Length: 189
Ligand SMILES: [Fe+2]
Image 1 (cartoon, helix red, strand yellow):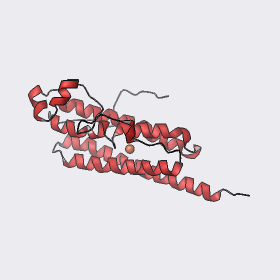
Image 2: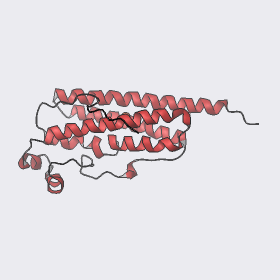
Image 3: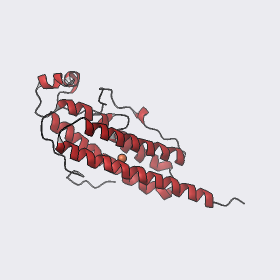
Image 4: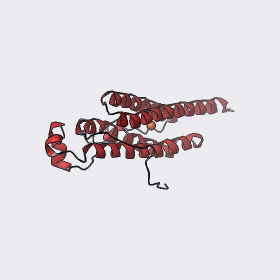
């Protein structure tokens, strides 16, 4: 169960209408290493992960939804005032034909989200290593997105998200160590 707080985890400001940047940000909305994939991956893995580390998946999976909300806000703000001509020039003509100004779970190339992006192996170490890799890929994607814009307000929000991915990666690494330690202590008679 979740309690909804009607505010973003971190403020999202943009200094200009920029539909092309919105298109690039869709990589973190409905892309393979994006926030939707992260949230769904972690919250789903909770059911078969040892009790000792369920809390980490709960915490991080929930936070990823807050990040998804921030990315949605960025895309909305960058496109809400864009004309059809501006959307076409930004490579969003196909998006407009299918969705008008609505958001859609797709990557920067327009490929719709798929559950094939995420895994649930049932092996705790395999799942946690996937989670660490996912966080590192998300961190790298945020860096490329920061490089792709000169909007300092947008960069500020993206930097916050990049830092959170670093923290998440560290927490998943700690979880691996907790499980390894637990396994080494178990006595077999
Ligand atoms: Fe994350």
